[in-house]
Length: 249
Image 1 (cartoon, helix red, strand yellow):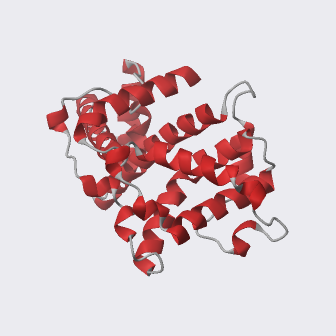
Image 2 (image 1 turned 90 degrees about the horizontal axis):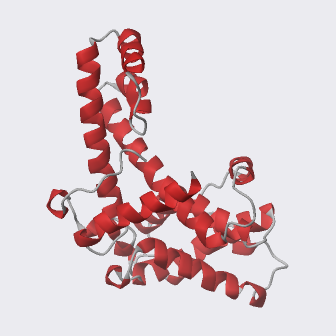
Image 3 (image 1 turned 45 degrees about the horizontal axis):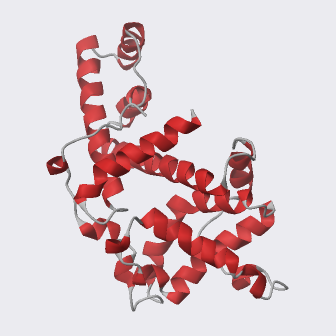
């Protein structure tokens, strides 16, 4: 994960409202605003939950139902809105909530589809199963699967946000042509190939890649700031996520 580096805490554009994107829904669990916020969050982070449940031994359809039911449970019970950002990282809260949900699973009536057939998020069964089949052997714990996929989801969200910025500026082709440089140190030939394909001078490509990586690091810090309780924790979280991803390499 080349683009994930330590920066001084002062470089962060930290705002606790990022972490509380869905926490602001307290008392509004039935409002369209609350549902949209929760659906957006879970649509980004559903796979870490799914991977954890599958590694706990649940079948593909059961895991899909459980993740859907868990998301609905948090919405209906207002559990997300009651989460306290000062008590730890959001990924820790989410995992512990899922663990508690599974611990109570056997106490629920299972004759009816979990969640009553309601859906908060779009869960693509084919995509979920295809991704899970690529997971490492069963010696890897459910918790490790969750943390690796959480880290990947953060990176994917970061890249998606950065690409959206380029599209807004009418530079979609430029981003797509240089995005491979975000996480790789490519050689001079690769830079020249990109320059030829984009019709740009080699110097311009190198300058753009430098700025792209800078913006990526900044956006990643912004994304991570949503999941921790203070700006002081961002660097530690980056180092932890680098360690998690390195262990999967």
